[in-house]
Image 1 (cartoon, rainbow, N blue to C red):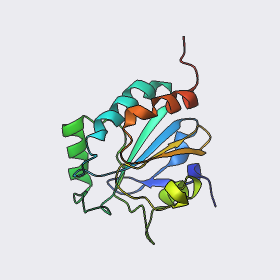
Image 2: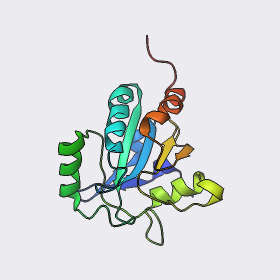
Image 3: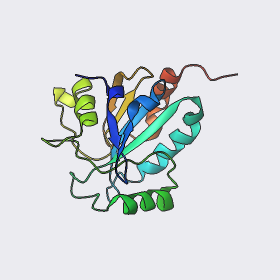
Length: 164
């Protein structure tokens, strides 16, 4: 299996963005939805992006409509919602599937590298989060109910000391 950084993410308007462009950065990868009870987590994800982005964190959002059909919009609607409702400035990629036969390769890799509770690989709901180190190794998986602020210590550990 290829490494995570050998894969590409779908751009909302078509085409692919190679994850290799993010080599050397800590990644927080999240499957998202605009009409979910966890949707307000966009605010916390944006806070992490603004605080830690300059030190090397990249938050990557992947809209998914597999859970309760809570992401029905097209790419333009999703981007507009994220920007106007939560002032999101981190990348929101094209809509994908995270489970099943059509699961995107990024999420197949993430799930295999960091199984969920009881060793199950399937993602249970929107806003499942994966933390990836600077070398592309998946180091943690967090449940949808875990607020982004609870990831601060793990992110800081991967980022290393703050510059003086």
